[in-house]
Length: 209
Image (cartoon, rainbow, N blue to C red):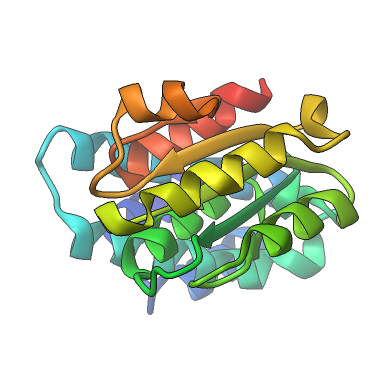
C-alpha cells in the first residue's frame, strides 16, 4: 500500500478504507511523518477543489473525516506534537452566537493543515478567548467566528481585547463568518479574513510561515 494510495483515499473521502491503508503503509515501512504530510497535501487538494467549485461542503467534510481516521492510526507512530506541528489555534464563535457548523468546518480544515485545535465552542465570552490564548503554550492563531450581523459587535470586542493583551505580538487573529468582510476585519484590527474553510486553512499556514 503506497503513500499515493493514502493520498488518493483521503481526497476521495474514503473514511472506512483510510485507517487500513495507513496501517498497511506503516507495516511496509512508510515513514509516519511522510504519511501525515501526504494527508495534509491531500487536504490542500480538497481545499482547492472546494474553492474552484468542483466539490461542496459535504465532500470536504467527508475528506476531513477520512484524514482524521488516518491520523488516529498514525498518532502512536509520530513524535509527540507532530500532528500539531504548526502550533495551536484557539477557535470559537463569539458571545450571543450559537452557530457552529462553519466554525467546526474551519476547525477541521485547520487541524488537517497540521495545527492543534483548542475549540471553545459557541457563545464564547471575550474573557474566555483571551484566557485560552494567554494560558496555553504555543498558541499561534486565535480564530474568531460570527455568523450573525447582530454578533459582529461581539467580534469587534473580542478582537479589541486580544489586541490589548500583552502577548498579542505572538499570535495572529483570524476572523470569518457570513456577515464578515475584509473591510470589517481591517477596521477591527484582525490580521486575516477568509471567506471559507479551505482558504482559512491555507491562510493559517501562511500566517505562521
